[in-house]
Every structure is written in structure tokens, then in C-alpha cells.
Amino acid sequence: MDRIDLGINLSSVRERIAAACRESGRGVDEVKLIAVSKTHSSAVVREAMRAGISVFGENRVQEAEGKIAELGREGLEWHLIGHLQSNKTRRAVQLFDVIHSVDSEELAERLERICLQEARERLDVLIQVDLAGERSKSGIKVSGLRPLIERLAGFERLRLKGLMVLPPFFDDPEATRPYFRRLCELRDELLPGGELSMGMSHDLCVAIEEGATMVRVGTAIFGERDAVPA
Image (cartoon, rainbow, N blue to C red; front, side, top):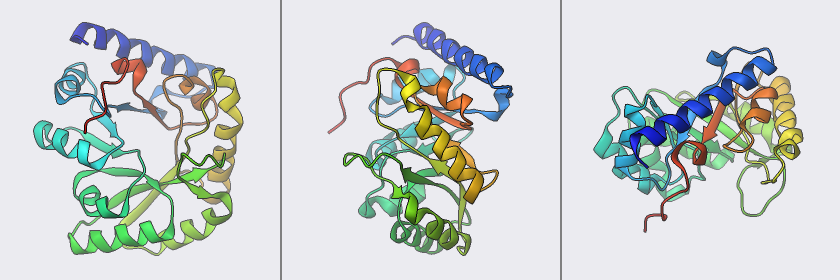
């Protein structure tokens, strides 16, 4: 994709975000756009930077490592939005500004321990909540959410910033609304004022109407994904 196309796509996404904010009586500054750059090359990410994007979301630690090494960190935020395997935890601590996919007390404890070992003073995290029970997706069950929040409250280095959800995919974005609404209810009950990471290219407007503070948008900005790196 050339820079002009990417710029047009980005403008369109920003217009959709602004319209959804107006519809729900919110300010556009209440919603952070995370450009999901997974599977896209460093060259494409660089074009996105030139178009004004500074916050990127990656699914895989190994893929992100090369991009961060090439593109740097100055003026950028790197978010891990995919499932974090235990053997990638140390690199994730070293690489990312925010991790959206904490889904167990064991993972949280491992992240805290590695932060201490790496002398990292603070790592912002979100809890991924499983609201649909899909086998292909991670997340903590609602029944385990309160104990995990309480456990994180006692940590020195991890800072719990909010909740994240990956609802099932529906052709009709309206079908995702109950999942977004439920996550907002859980946030209000258990973590008042916390972030809500929810909504992607096809359903971001519904997510914003239901309270999203972070939307994770890939295809609507970058177009169809490249082949997944080996």
C-alpha cells in the first residue's frame, strides 16, 4: 500500500471514530487508536508513522521484535494484543509498553517477577476477559476476574490499566454489542475508571458507543494482511 492510500484509510478510520464519539456524546480524545500492524512489514509500519500513527499493536513477540529493533521506540507505543506464551514473557517485558492479554494469575506473577529481574519499574497491563468461551481465544473467565484484579493490586511493578475482550466475529457489528456492554459493566463494577480495549475494524463504532477507550484497528488502516512471517 502506498502512503496516499494509507493516509486516506487512516482519515476514514478517524472520521468513523469521531462520528461514533459524537453519537455517544464523548470526546475523540477519550479513544486511543491502536494500529494493528501484525503481519505487515516494517516498511508499511514506517509509512503509517509518516501518516501520523504512533501507537502500534502486535500479536506475536517474535514478529514485533524485528520491527521494534528497526523502527525504534522514540515517540512510539508498542502494545502486545495477542496471547502471550510463557516462554516469550521476558522478551515481552523488554519490548512492549502495554500488554493487553494477561489472562491468569500465573502469567501475572511471571510478568511481575521478570520486571523485578529486569529492573523495569512499571509495566502497564490489561486483563483479557473470556466472554464467549471460544476455544480459539484466550482470556480469563468472569468468575476468575475479581481474584486476578485483587492479585494484581498487590504487585509492585505491574499496573493494571483495564480490561480487554475479543468477541466472536459476526457479519453484523451490532451482534458484538452485548459483549462490549458486558465488559463495560464488569469494568464499572470491578475496576472503575479503567480502560476498555475493545473494537476492531468492522465493529469499532459499536465498541465506542459502549465505552471503548482503546480500539484495535488493522485492516481498515493497512488493508488485507500480508502472509504471516515464518
